[in-house]
Image 1 (spheres, one colour):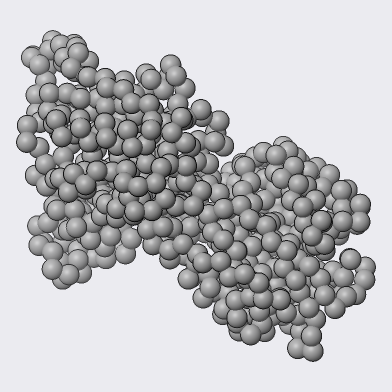
Image 2: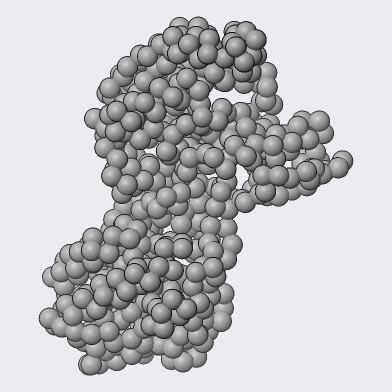
Length: 561
């Protein structure tokens, strides 16, 4: 179609899940999808941002060998378009060819009629939150439209549409429609923000806009897909599903007032607890599968956090790939033993009980010479947690599954967790969920079996787990509230400090006691050294620890009241 003019064409949207650095696998996926879309009569297939290599590349893109491999894969894919089938818009890093000192761009290439017909580069490079593209990419010039079959295609890349300049320039240069490859990660409420941005660009340019987003997990980021098309009148013509691989051929027609997408299905998009749950499951599944782990093992304490992590693990991987272990000690309640066993039974997982008395006593005996006696106080409490962490890691070493750590954001924020103990592990699916959100998702999962989830229907987490006082059970009659403010209070203060960056006086003005706010602020800052050593976990909020919120460990700043 590249050399002829038509009054209609078919544009295929490939909402797919690339694997970082797996150029051969991503190329194979692209070819398979192209064959599928060719059978549906597609003229052009568009893939998401940097699909050929995976996104985000971080410093991997600075490796010349990766740049060369990406160009070679692109050329191989271009050759395949000489068969008369659909053309391809493919995202990849594009080096200028001048060696180690040259520039590399975040680019998209039009592959048609057996060759690379055009290349366009990303102009606006995001450098906030999880993005640091200015570190690794050079900004390209404002792109010009790409001629294709009588149309002029504007192809801004992701961040290019979050400011006015690029789309406005493309419209002035005669673009008939805007096709936007995206690597837009999920956080709560993100789809409404995307609709707002796209609606603004459509209103300004009077051009229809195709928003094609990546799907799948990449380390701590998870991409929800949820691709869509807006026509020039601002109406949503097509909404693809979120949280799944999806492909769709859209039909376009030229009319007196320009090009229009023929209205298609508007798939409902998950929101709230449903979206957060699927984000955690998707991130966990892809982290385990893309890194080649056979499964996961976790300590199942009978508490709410490990219960939810176990449910997510089974939903992500299936019961046969999840191993739960209860690690009781002298302070483990009979209720916790019963609750853990019920959860494991409901999920259908392998469940073992491994008492830790011998390990704790043995380690304590090793310390008597240095400490002048058996450890006590916090040292003794943490020794229990570290014994559990050591035993779980030993199971991982011998049997192969990755250890899941199960601390929520409330605990991680204030350091209510033990380094090399309950913080041991390779991934944490609830790392960015506050305690209140853990309860909300647990209740949600008891009532729903989300799409694509492999776990059972019905109640998984017993009501007793949802209603009992949270406790680390490291000493007699211990309760979290003995050390921390009640979780609803703690979560609100933390949300103010972490997500909103409110000042201490502003938080006090919300009705919180000054001494409580100052205590939480102090704990938040002091726990930074622990968070630096924590396992990665799925990003859910707009400001997670690590990629978004980057604070110094050595830090004496405290606000005055």
